[in-house]
Length: 393
Image: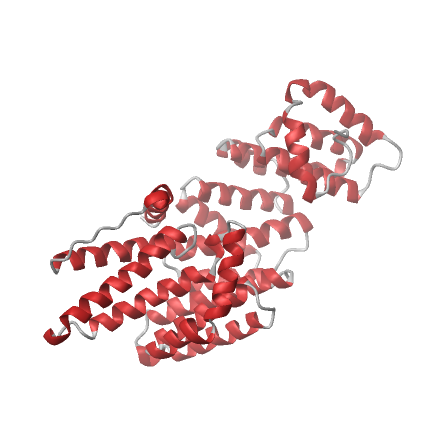
């Protein structure tokens, strides 16, 4: 293993960490080697400081905050202007250990308008969110984004700004503030992210717009749904990939929200079925089923079948067809719950499946579902649902 002072490429960081794990008992020697390496002629400079900052953050993530602080102490000795960054690393260590008062005290020691202090405030907000203190998290996020209507110029703070805007959006969505969640997503686009990140954000915004539209009477939905459809088309210009597949599901959801159930069925079961199946196969081969657009398309098919069944419920002559269609809907939801439990659709599918199971049993039918090897995964999805509901209170 090379000395810690050498640049560490992000792609190789995992290997560095695995080797580093076996050197924890030699902290003093490691620090000595680090200091010598940093002191070599030509080693100082902004680029090297950036690399050491990335490395120190990785050390915090891997549970070595003390060594991370030593890395930054060595950097600060060579370049005192890096003191603010060192405070960020120190604060991240406090937050990881749930020592929030220590991180807050660190902020108070810094100049009032120091962007590094603002970065620590965002790190605190994310920490509070991660550990379930949602009111405190929302207070800090709200204060920050009120202060920064536009992306900050400071490079370190800009990274926190982008990452935190996404976390803040998810928190607002969980709290039911869909407009606020969409606005927070929009802040990420202001930072000129890479193409794929921008496509992901637009796809998420489209789904938020649909959720907002569904809370309105049908006659008032179209403006929001039109905006969501526009975002889907922008996403599709990026290529035939996962984002493309998700946009098809979103387009079908838009049709459902307009009351066009047959058009939605055609999109996911005919026009784009082969593409969705192909993407699904590739993702499963790489153990990434949770990202598959088939989770959304099968969930949507469950909804379509359930609505089909509702149209038969009052017709006694169609009782058998009604029960068969309910059972088909149940199958779709349970398959999403079991096969795609890691997706955003998984927990919702579990709730819908249980409701349909109860309905069918109330009609005198016995429902036997053998999860087999998927039982453990299904249990994990149930716990995730419980955790989500707890966060939403």
